[in-house]
Length: 239
Image 1 (spheres, one colour):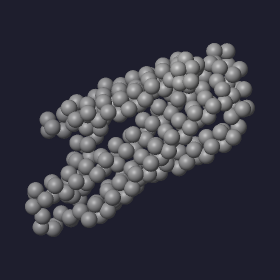
Image 2 (cartoon, rainbow, N blue to C red):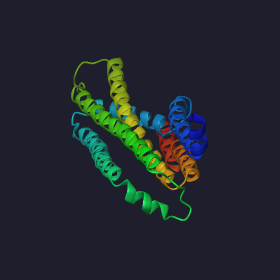
Image 3 (cartoon, rainbow, N blue to C red):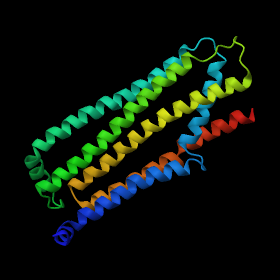
């Protein structure tokens, strides 16, 4: 029975395994690689550390709290959008027959049964739920940052340089944790786009998964944005 199932669905099984390798593999690779190689995450952490050092030297911290509020609004937007997407996917589960007939009209669409279609929708549901948890945790962490900024010592208070540096490092670390969870949520969105290719053909699903990994790597480890950030940091060090 198992052998028959594998033989009948091997293209889908291969595509699914490849997707998991791409999704989990890139998450692991980016986390390990960022510790030894300059990337958007590591460079932006240095900028956040510098931001918090300057924040501790200012009495007026309205610009800092406004910047944090802007970051929170961005995360909240994606969290609420994810809820709408989940509602849409639940609705699509009840109308799968019509959706299957529409997709089947595509010339190169791979034949798909109702069970396979439901599994693909469930995969999307799981991914978007995962993204939602990441966005909401990021939102809470930005709330923690607001509390830490509110409790930061003012310039006139008697704090040693070591304590000020440690305080700046703690706030920068919490801000980077919030940004990292937001980034993971965005990566999940990218991979959800790859899953859409599965509704048409398993080969397209594999190609889309590979493309997402390539795009993410280019943007995080070898992009013009990263080069600009590094040039700005080098210019500041030169002065």
